[in-house]
Image (cartoon, rainbow, N blue to C red):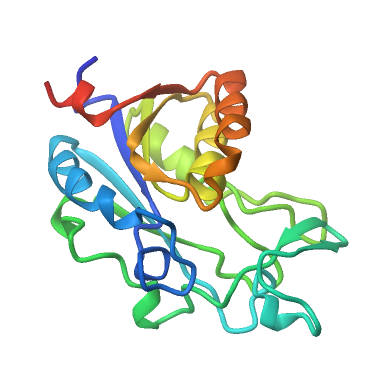
Length: 213
């Protein structure tokens, strides 16, 4: 299993301060993946990094819903919405990508979750909006225009944005490889459920050491 610089793209999901220890929505052990990503990214010719980029009072913030608390699920017209602490607010230090990620390796920085009324876990599509749609971010078409066939997925968090990105990449017709050592979960107890969904979609699981031999 080797990196093909002509057909492979590395996708680094939400490696931002608010998802790292000390951040507003810290993922346990999230900082542990930074050195591995710093080693891996320069090996790819195409590297996409996503960035949660929420306006204040975003629909995913518990603070935007009176009487609600973080980590509750609220039923909205478009479906269930996980509620989170305010995080990755546009232009704040918490929204910045960790400086350990080699910025010069990035081909594209894709900002998501920018509309106040709809969340966006996936790098490829927004979550369902009030009109019942899942608008595309355009990433699939952008990758195909660069002749990419396989997407290697990493980042935070495995059980939300990484999972959604991997599943949507498969739905877009790409081969997908998820590197288990370069991701961490918000809720590790859901690991088996997430793995089952990835397996069912045909997402392959591996480790960065398998690519860097």
